[in-house]
Amino acid sequence: MLDLTGKNALVTGIANNRSIAWGIAQQLHQAGANLGVTYLPDDKGKLEKKVAELVEPLQPSLFVPCDVQNDEQVAAAFETVQEKWGRLDILIHCLAFASRDDLSGDFSNVSRDGFNLALDVSAYSLVQLCRAAKPLMTEGGSVVTLTYLGGVRVIPNYNVMGIAKAALEMNVKYLAAELGPQNIRVNAISAGPIRTLASSAVGGILDMIHHVEEIAPLRRTVTQTEVGNTAAFLCSDLSTGITGQVLYVDAGYEIMGM
Ligand code: NAD
Image (cartoon, rainbow, N blue to C red; front, top):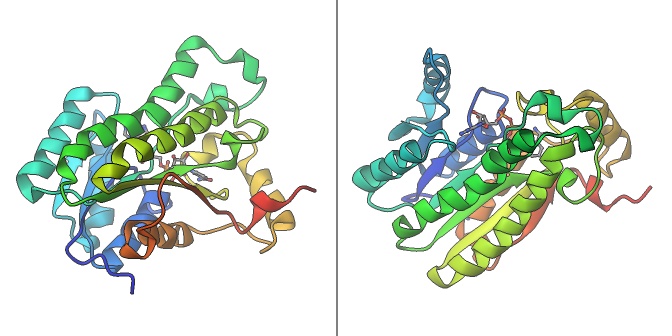
């Protein structure tokens, strides 16, 4: 049975009720996990308020700011985890960012700054968060990140984010190899296209979704709940033999050649 009772789960990346991280948080909660939620702070505190209201029904026992570009904030977030929980079992890395200008047009136009920004927020952050989580995962643990097919194949307009996802997927393997002896598993879910705040920055996202609906074996794309269910599985004792993998939750689209 999928049971996460007694597990402490830190979920990053909830921006609104379309966020994949929201789908994951709901499924972890349903499976009995004790939730902690991080949010990306903004100047006016608008996002904090919005996310706090959204997650309130899941009764997170921890709600902390965590901008992965701010080392002090990341350190403070994990200090809070240590103080309040003592132990971390589950880490959900569900965040990415690239400048909108770099998500359409010719890939070769990406600037050095734009390239570094996308790689920093979307790929390096997994290493950063795992490093912080490692000493807290004293009874083993499970880390799940979110990737996309554009990290292994060319998808129009995905551009620099494809490079970031390629780096992220290799991060998963190196981290899984390093953390495995401590019984910490690290896996990625490669989700099919879903309409969210982040995906709406990618040029032609609706065309991508319609294409998947025509071609994927299941003739549709996937939902946040389906991704959430797979994340819950990867965090549970049902998947203790799985680490270093990229699991496709994409209605089968990835297998198609033509
Ligand atoms: P989203 O916009 O709901 O979530 C992106 C999150 O990243 C937001 O919560 C945002 O606050 C956070 N974020 C951005 N910069 C940050 C920073 N500096 N520090 C901390 N957090 C930061 O969109 P989403 O589609 O749910 O994206 C979640 C993950 O899923 C991303 O890694 C995305 O690439 C991946 N993904 C999305 C799709 C899709 O089609 N939506 C498909 C496959 C993978």
